Amino acid sequence: MMQAMEVKKDIYWVGSLDPELRVFDVIMYTPYGTTYNSYVVKGSEKTAIFETVKEKTFDQYLERLQSLNIDFDEIGYIIVDHTEPDHAGSVAKLLDYAKNAKVVGSAPAIRFLRQIANRPFQEVVVKHGDTLSLGNKTLRFIEAPFLHWPDSIYTYVEEDHVLMTCDSFGSHYCFDGIFRDLIPADKENEYMDALKYYYDCIMGPFKPHVLKALDKIKDLEIDTICTGHGPILRGNIDFYRDTYRKWSTEVAPTDGKTRVVIPYVSAYGFTEDLANKIAEGIKSKINDAIIDLYNVIYHNQEEILDKIYWADAVLFGSPTINGDALEPVMELLIKMNPLVHGGKVAAAFGSFGWSGEAVPNIEARLKSLRMKLVTPGLKINFKPNEDELLQAFNFGETIADKIVENINKKTKKVNKVELKTWKCTSCSEKFETANAPQVCPACGGGQDKFVAVTK
Image (tube, rainbow, N blue to C red):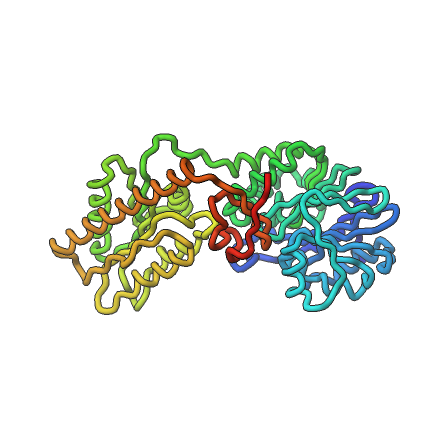
């Protein structure tokens, strides 16, 4: 029988191992496999289970639970720190055994789980600062939205100085020793690579939210972090907090210059000619602008994305081939998201032969990213002549005007408008604006989801 492993007195790991997994969530490569971590915390009065496992591994999960000789009828709570199915996918099955358990989570978590479990269950909705007693153990809940879903929370076991973080601080690294400090020295680089890759893919798009969460736990006495994936972290906790802070802290340019990024591909040089002329048009209006032109096939996409992060505007260029924009540009666009890139000035341009779908297809993606789209984009049939190059130059001037307008609007809002704090009741994220946002930049909820927060 597969055995549970003791983390601390009356706290046990009961997760599942998936060493053969090579692709996670469609987009992440997992050369070291992964684990789906779940934990049992036994209090003097109640027992709680934290997270479950991916449904396909439920049998080994159940064996580990049974190895503790648990009376399932005495399980009081199933704590769901995050409802992604690799963590909450077995809640419905677990409830078949733990019939008296109440499911505990944030308001979004409970809402999401109703649609994942597709069955009724007893629920307890918790918010930041709430506590739950297991008798001699106290659970304190900490809101950590968008790490990496709007439902995410941390749970601090106060008496044991244990923090349950689900995806935060995790890694896709299957190690049957379970604890990070037991990883052999010759595997150290593997683990650190897996930790960073996991951060980049899962947490990287939400760096401001990572920093907010780190601030909430900076004064907690923590000696163990129980992650949702990968090894449990025992000791040296400041190293992981400091590492996450370092990875999440972006150093903004301080020169005050306008930044424009122009990623493009060009089959015969026609779209490249447009890119260069558009850049000239922008410089004619903003002469100290820093403009980075990238032929995408010759540059690392992460390098381009780093530049886009600080850009005031991004212009994407692609010829139309087989009725669409080309893959390198679309791949770059797919790696962007509205939480990070929304609000930037954006536009599309490109050469075409007889149909010209590239520009509108790029524009559709830019619109979904909630960018400030300059339309119509620039479409030129085959090789641009002198008049068409002038069109490209003028298009650049239009972009420059839009950049200046966008920057001025932001400045006026900061300097002249009395800001209020608005909380989205769907995801709990807060924003400082004069009026309630039309759409929540975090979860997409409507204006009716916002309530003013009194300070």
